[in-house]
Length: 135
Length: 118
Image 1 (cartoon, chains in turn cyan, blue):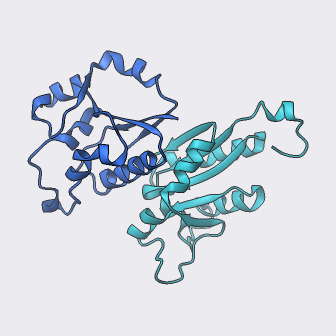
Image 2 (cartoon, helix red, strand yellow; image 1 turned 180 degrees about the vertical axis):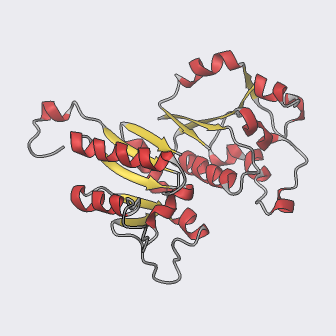
Image 3 (cartoon, rainbow over the protein chains, first blue to last red; image 1 turned 180 degrees about the horizontal axis):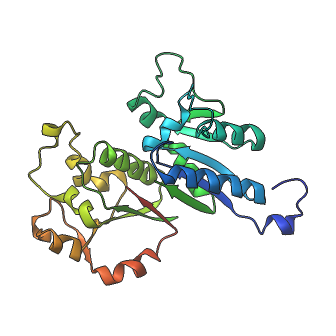
């Protein structure tokens, strides 16, 4: 709830958890997830967390450099986190399995992303009004 | 929270099955009321006599046989038509199941607060 909302206004809005299973460059699902997340925060809904699972963990790869005339499908999530404080979490087991994150050495993730276990996803699902799964 | 976990992919799709079961068991560990429904190629998860190691996959059979140990009390639901279309009989599955007709699935989904998929 933003500070400008009255309690009555805030009650009109639901809280959401998004689970993103699709990789950033593997089809439409990841684009839909981003578009939905952006629309939620712009409309004032509460986006509790975006949890990246399965191939979705590739969103956290640091150093993606697509050609200048293409949208960077990783940087736009980082921007959403920076501007709107959205919590971007990648699953530790899925990220480790794919070499996106390694607990043994310091791994750089894309800005705004952090690593946590599946328990955090389940906690988010329980605490949110809605769960949407992409991919 | 009443949660339905729907499996509709075969167990041979890389790490998909293992990651789905990880999520399913985590849900159950949070004391949520979780039920499992197998549709389409998801029914192959319960077919006996497979050798997942031969194609580099983890054997998930023990997890399926012991779901109750992880807090998933009821037997999985399996769609009749998904079995029939693949020539599989419920008696041939590795664990007891509850059966549901395709025409009832949409109504069945309405019993749950949250639906997750594999």
